Amino acid sequence: MAALKKRYLPVCLRDNLGVLARVPLASGFLTGKYQRGVSFPPGDYRGKQSQESLDAKADQAAEILRKEVPEGVNMAAWAIAWCLKHDAVACVIPGARNAAQLRANASASELADGNHPLSM
Image 1 (cartoon, rainbow, N blue to C red):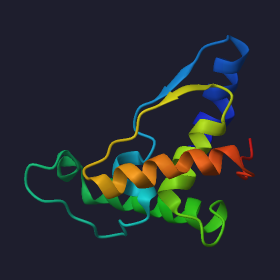
Image 2 (image 1 turned 180 degrees about the vertical axis):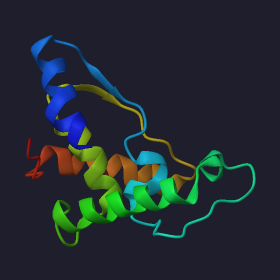
Image 3 (image 1 turned 90 degrees about the vertical axis):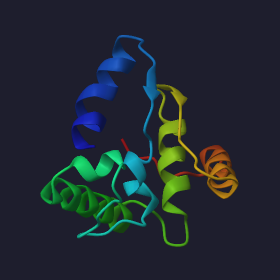
Image 4 (image 1 turned 90 degrees about the horizontal axis):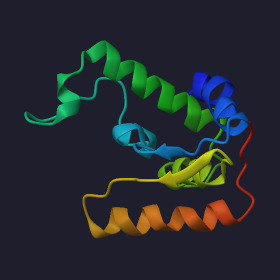
């Protein structure tokens, strides 16, 4: 995330390139529901990653939650809104497995329209 914010997004802005945010919830880690020790069922592509890699992603998501997401704000909506608010991002494509996730994803537009604490 740090390299994205500090290196890649500024280059995209400078060169007038639009970013397609294809996995804005980091394969579910930015929903806040996965912690260290997470495992995934057989057939889930995330289960092909090492436990060390999964734990690192969980740790990174926990740090983002602690340092950047305001208290009382849904982490998934905040992550999508972060993408929507960034000037380099042209399109955000979050996934949804059910209607509740779809509604939650759509609610991010309200956060993006308001005072989202996007810090570059």
